[in-house]
Image (cartoon, rainbow, N blue to C red; front, side, top):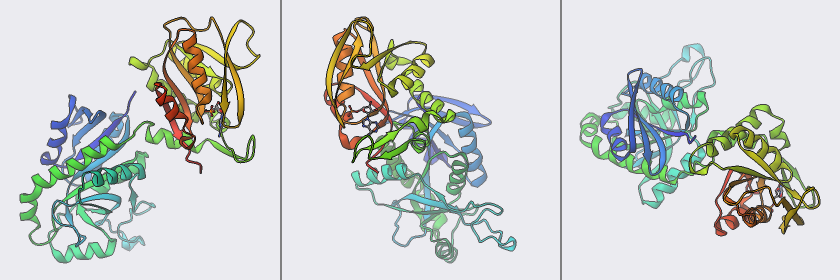
Length: 417
Ligand code: AMP
């Protein structure tokens, strides 16, 4: 099942833009909060108005996480500008955030640190940040990446604004962002904060805030919407990071210069293996990607493909290296990243018209997967997609498959590191 991108705004004037943009919209009320689900720019989203202040924002974020499977959370709205370079309607994309009003100095903790913990700066997710940066640049929006300060106080004095700017090196100030960021950090949900400047947090802040709220909120909506459009949430952010961390790299194997991405370390980890099959089963269990049969490629494709077939309640067919299959076969020769090989399939393994999902652990040059597609098609099967745990984009295999008219999916990629 596709996860949701959570969007949290503090106020009606902010949330209204996302609700307007929603397609296939539905609402449900949970513990007094109204959650709107549907799609924005093709991505599945859940939207909620938290109300103002850190408690409202934090509680609402936790409720969202407990109620919906989330791939990411974006908190957005307007803010007071602290960085003198920022004018009204400029945008801030969070590098990180902190609570400027937490003060347990008497207990030996510096201001901003949650006492008895190491919680202080809440870093935004780098992939979400990169998507927002790209979106801002594409639409020539004036946006800086910076630090957001949050506190349960509407800052409306130049002196106070300057003091917190200096002390915490903050770029803007609001009353919710860092609370949402803290909840996301604790729950290990990637987050990003995007705010548009409505005032300068000085003596005219309350007047400017009221005058600018609507237009500034519109501006932050524009960037959030474009960021969502840019996001490549395939694969899911949290699962991908967890799965990648369990894959071992063996340098110079089976020959010098090859970085071998070894999934045996992933398979022996029960949570990691289960998670991998969960991600694939979510994608292929229902709808137009559900296959009739899975074809796994020798040898690690057997392990993943068989586990997935069992989970989906469908059959499994092996494609083997030459000379291993006992009955009548079709075969195809192909180039490997490190040599040449031939693969074979039993001629009676696929029925004409079968919807086939091809599974392997990794795609490198794409030679093996392409040969597997040809074998399946020669037997009358229809390849609905090829899926891999790992893609090595530098070797161009996935591009080759797409160019050949096939669909391809992967969970993690390695860029040659
Ligand atoms: P290719 O045909 O180049 O896409 O190669 C993919 C097949 O070779 C898969 O079955 C992989 O298991 C294996 N393979 C190729 N390169 C690597 C690598 N760097 N690390 C791990 N497996 C690889």
